[in-house]
Length: 148
Image (cartoon, rainbow, N blue to C red; front, side, top):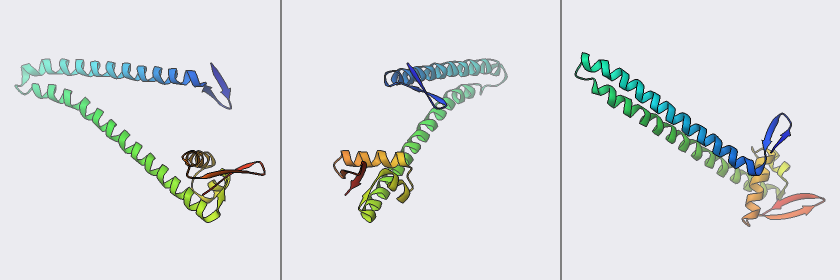
């Protein structure tokens, strides 16, 4: 089920999806509980306020709008993070292509030296470009090199 590697546990392929689904279900349950608690608090506050002022209904409106605003803010934040990650990947790809143009051929380790990427990022991007047919893969002296 689990494999211990180094200091952490790694979930095997089949169980990874189950773990992600369990985490998502737990997150949804927590969100529902939080919203129910928030709604109960708003109702408890608006009851006594109705005896004190005729503007008690503003508490209900605020209570409904605040969770919507927080949800929208977190969605927009996730969208901004996704855009930043995609822009960084595009920058890394461009760096790799420029390094390939300068050097002629690259190994993932050499690509990491020539660019701001680390070895695993360079290896992944080079593999993706080769799989898409943009790069040629060669084996030289037991090393995999990529060329334009």
